[in-house]
Length: 430
Ligand SMILES: Cc1ncc(COP(=O)(O)O)c(C=O)c1O
Image 1 (tube, rainbow, N blue to C red):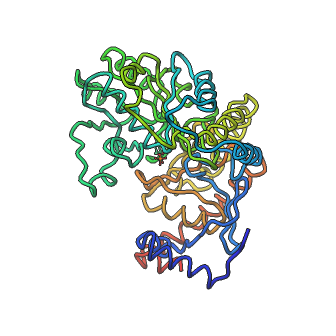
Image 2: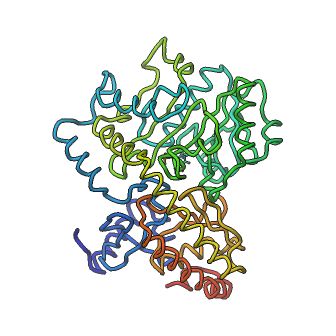
Image 3: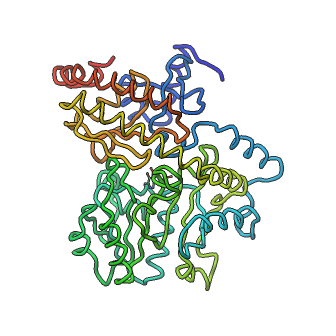
């Protein structure tokens, strides 16, 4: 992989600033984090200068569940290009049929059909469309702090900071506190077409609901003939130690949305898995929903390979073993830094560290970066940093991450003082 010297790097940043996003370039400059991803392999990413190396402890929310450039998936991708391409979304397809059958075999109940897309947001939009079309109702309930993407219908269910700048009409969406059953009951009405929630809220900081809450939501949806859409774009594919996070709660959703990790980090793919009765909406005209690139044939081969790897019981055991090591390490860290660490949220390798102050999430992101870890604070709760390492992480690497976290936490007090004194990241970090 080519490396770039300081001068070349500053030209790239300038091109980005002037032709992609001025504001983004400014933010990274202010944080003193002008990292440009060059070499990437397994759990690690390197700056294009070839020097700065980071452990990817965010995995782009699960895109890199299997690490960067998994050798087996690359082989599958290359082999697929020998005979395939995107395919034609009008035709019946060998690859899409195989992949949808595989997904059905991994899902409980009659979650037997899949509509493929390219992004998580697109797959969420489709789920909401199906619910509104099937029920002939309009209202949607979503949860505060929940995140489902930036496309039209998905965006309407999300946080105000992402939709208000675009003036989107959200009058049909009721947003309720996650994990509070009374708020949910108050919002549910004969007009509710769908309830949409992540099994574990990720952008809100790895918020894990009570099992009884999820089960009551499920039952109330059934009674009200409202469709339950579960977003597993981040929580699915072994991330929590089971194929699907909803399995921890013993519920069967009406639709399950998958994305990110389905791609193997190499070929975009998303999926809306739908219970059999709700596919009737497509009976009269099967062409009322189209995604030209959704379920591309090369991508389907990649995703089949991802599913084979991530659903292997040995792989899931590995995830649970690594999760137990983290859990033990977290106890030690919390004892050592009680004034800084409030708590840890964890389901499998879906983990978050909650600090005692809102400043500390962004400061930890910076301190971790300086120490060699890439971990991002939760955009909907800045006191929390998300920890989502690749699921292929080894025992030695868990130790490495815990040691680096300890070092980074050790820097937080200094950063806090400096931030107060100077009021800007730029002046304290550059
Ligand atoms: C839980 C969840 N759902 C949906 C999405 C949207 O996915 P995409 O960015 O591929 O549209 C995201 C993206 O981060 C997500 O985290």
